[in-house]
Amino acid sequence: MTDYASVSGRIFDIQRYSIHDGPGIRTVVFFKGCGLRCRWCCNPESQSGKTEIWQRSSLPEEVGYDVTAGEVIKEVLRDLPYYRRSGGGITLSGGECLLQPDFAYALLSLAKAHGIHTAIETALFAPPSHVERILPLVDVVLMDIKHMNPQKHKEFTGQDNVRILENARYVGEHAHDLVVRVPVVPTFNDTIADIGQIAAFARRLPRARAIHLLPYHRLGQDKYTALSRDYGMGEIPTPTDAKMQSLRRAAETAGLPCQIGG
Ligand code: SF4
Image (cartoon, rainbow, N blue to C red; front, side, top):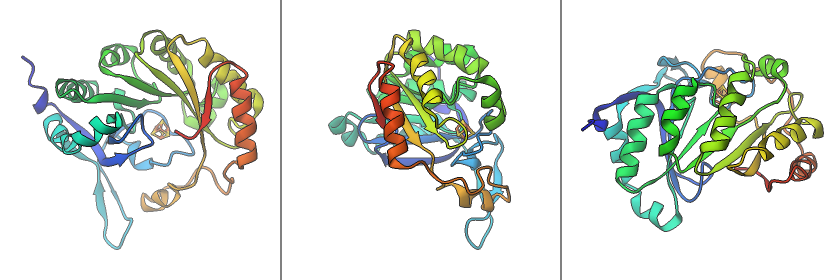
């Protein structure tokens, strides 16, 4: 029998009591490493797969650490009564959890063995074999679709969307439950046409049940300073409520329920 508890991976945080990363009250495990470099990323410390030094207070600190699946599940199990009462569970986030497939598989397998609901937050920039392996263990997939135009996608994230959309079609056919999430980013994808195209794509995915529009925010800006990196969004303001409502209505005309926020 596989010893899932001893499989190790690299993360940068574990957050308890989250209510924005899937149903109910959840514990979120933030994986380190992502193949995209979204200009608006609010977790720039997630992007490199290596540990890094950053300075958020007076002393430099290491961000990122190695941990076993057994150690993570021990932490997750502390809140089992909350999951049971709220319909919550564990969410693998990042970074990109699909880039550490052995670790993700081990965590999800251990969660399932304890009867814990499982979710992943993914941008799907990962080998299709990783997606196919992990998906059967996931109760709900929270899947980002950022833009339907490959050039625009590359301009703002560093990569085109070809692999992402291929993976999205697979997930759309095979997921147990699927929510399509769109980070709404001014100057990138905040027009009725942009959101309408994503919503039309989502509507064709048989397992997709909803679209969530996530307004761009600037909360991660100080992290770039801590990592001695430039913030890629400059002074671009966050979208207004009126703009978000108009985009929500545009998305709903494609045929799926749409809400603002996760
Ligand atoms: S996919 Fe997510 S974690 Fe990766 S760079 Fe983009 S916003 Fe950051």
